[in-house]
Image 1 (cartoon, rainbow, N blue to C red):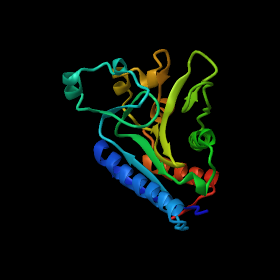
Image 2: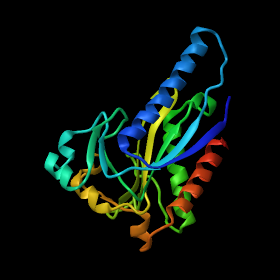
Image 3: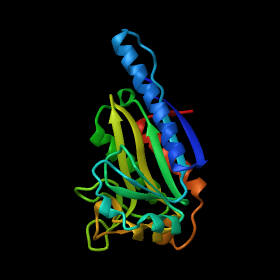
Length: 231
């Protein structure tokens, strides 16, 4: 099993460009796995952990409902936002500057073949990162992602998740609100949940957080939990 993982930070990148780059890596990895199976080869499959930020964009997963986007075409223009229907699980979500978007493109045969555990492990990395800043967070029964005050009426989401997995190769991932402009969430029903709020580290701490510091802490927590060898 190859536990080496190449970490890449794409910085601020247009959503479509990031999606295309993900697809290219994903397709190459799946093709390599098929080659290993059909030609009885044993070529090592690569793993990547990609972080980035996107300009304002709304993305709709395979199980999403169009009515959960509350803007029409002109509204998107007015908000300088784009909209994409994509092939991950989940409903609608928002990406924008000040948000860490994580795209682990991993061959889970190198780690563990359990998509439920995969999601819970990503959640745990975010939970540990928030704890580094004194923010207590956890899970909301029945929902993916990371929440604050999940056990009461003040429940609010700070990290959304939606993944695609084929032949145990993953793509898409998570969106972690660090200094994100939360007003953009008012234009959707986030993840199809109409009675829960969203929040950010900045909102909770009342100051703008060093996103590069958060990225580094989060990267190290992910690496430790997955037993990765980061490159």
